[in-house]
Length: 483
Image (cartoon, rainbow, N blue to C red; front, side):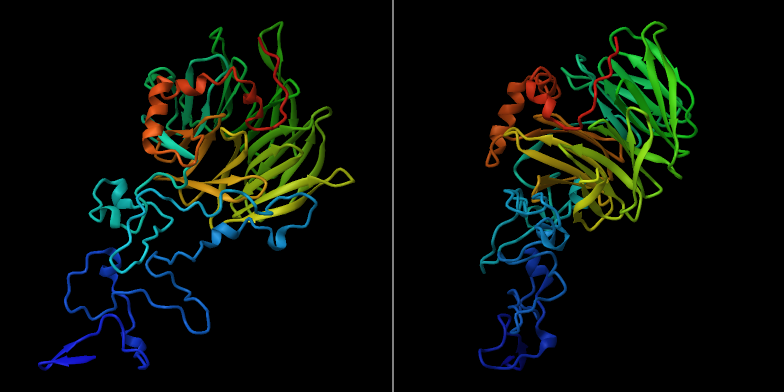
C-alpha cells in the first residue's frame, strides 16, 4: 500500500510486480463486478484475480462471472465419457449446440476488458418487474437461452400446475388441463380462452387421439369426441389417473394404485369397454408410451416394465433408475427415460431382445418429462424439464445442449410440433414457443414471423397437414381407429 499525506491509499490494481501480496487483501470488489462501485478509494480489487500458479481453478464461482475460456460443466455432460458403452453414438458430442450460452442481455464489457457472463439462472427481480441492475444484472433477463427458439406468447387463466396439453387433429382449439380441476379451451385463431370446462377433480393427464379427447381424473377417465360432442365416462381406475396412451386399438391408463387399465372401443355400442388390467407395478404408474408393438410403463416404484401389446404380458422389468421414473419416450429403436434420480437413460435391445442401458446422461436436478420433436431443419431435438424450473433442449444423439427454457415454477407439460411447441408450468401459465429456422435470426425477424403467421396458435394448426408431422415424436404408436 502507498501512503499519501498520512492517508492509506490501496492500490486497487494489485501490488507492484514482484512484491508478495497479502492474500487477505486479494478480494475482488462485489460492486465493481456489478458495475456500480462508487467508493474511492475502494479497499478491494477492481480487476479479476488471475488463476493460481499451479493451474487449478477455485472451487467457487466468482459471483457468476467467468472468463471467456471457462465453460459450464453441463456442456460436457453429454460428451461421451465413461457412460458410453454401446455401438450407438449417444452422447458422442459433435452436436452444434455446445454450451448454448444466452446472448440476450448478456451485458457489455467494462473499461477494463472483463466480459460479463450471465449465471444460468433467471433473475427473480426481473420476473417481478423491478430489477434495478438492468443489463448489468448477473442473472438472466430472458425466458430462454440459445437462439434456436423464441417465446411467442403466454396463455393465462389456470390457477394451478398445468398437467396436460393437447391439440386434437382437425380441431381449431387447443386444450389445456390443470390441477385446478378445469380444462381450458383456447381459440387457435385469436389465442383467447374460448371456454372453461369444470370437471370436479384434478386433471392428471390429457391425450388427444383422432377426434377424441381423454382426460385422466381421480377414479375416472373422461372421453369426448370434438366432432360429434359425444361425452363418455370410463370407470374402473382407483385413485388419480396419471398417464394415458393408445396402442393396438386399446386405450391404456396408468393409475395411482399401480395398475394399468385398458379399454377397447366398440363401434356398435359407441362405448369404451374394459379389456384388461395389467398388474405388476407396486406404486403409481406415472408415464406410458407405445412403440414397436410394446407398451412401456414408468412408475413411482422406480421401475420400467415392458408389455407385449398382443397378449398384454409383461416381458421385462428394468430397475436401473434409483428414483421415480417420471417419463418414457420411444425414439426410433431406442427407449429414453428420465427420473428424479437426475438421469436420462437410453435403452437399446440386445441380441436376446431385452433392453439394456447404452448411455446415461446426468444433470444437476431431478428430471420430470421428455418430449421429442424435430426443428425446422428436421434435426432431432429432445426437450427435458427439470425440477429447477427449467427445460433443457438437447441435440440428439450427441446430447449437446442447444438452449434452455425457464419458468416461474416446474414445467410439468410439454406438447410439441414441427415449428411450434407448448409448455405448461406450476403457476398455471402456458407458453407458446416458436422454432427459429436461422439460429442467428434477429428479434425483428422473429416479430415478422409472428405477424406473417396471422395468429399465435394458428401457425401450429397450419402445419397439421404437413407430412413431416409424422416425425414429431417417433413413438411408433398405432392409430386408434375411432369414428
